[in-house]
Image (cartoon, rainbow, N blue to C red; front, side):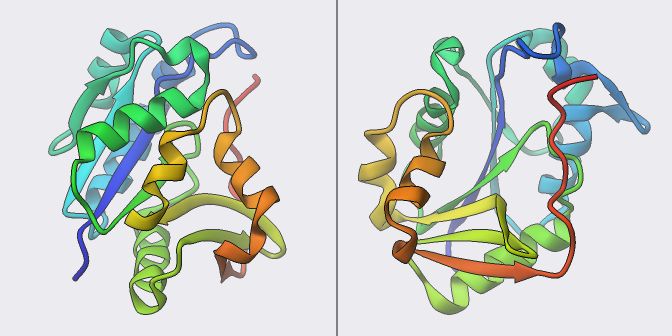
Length: 184
């Protein structure tokens, strides 16, 4: 099996929601706690949880069991800063799998299916295709790390997909794209 590191992006400032969405109650835990539990239940050997805004409260609600927690002090500059913090923490790896801390509809089974597809084909990157709509999780091979390190701001990985869709393998799943939490 390849060394694929899961990176959970949970450092956002929640400007649109008006309070730290990572701490919102969700099921028997917090929104971020739900996502972390699913990522930790997947086949990923290593998991990095990137926090920033409301880090102490988010960590208290998430209660990671095996994820390494990383503090992104530059979280206000956009999600690319969290990606960079996660890459730095991951160290050498065959690939990284990006999961959003505010998208609880992506479970361990889906994470494992996207990872397995990446391992079978080893593309530069993979994007999950929900009935024609691109979404998370995304997987980036080590060959993509230099370009990922050059990103900045928000929606940075999507700019890569828009610029070079031929570099991304689409992993098709027959379901609607899970919603991420941005507003009440």
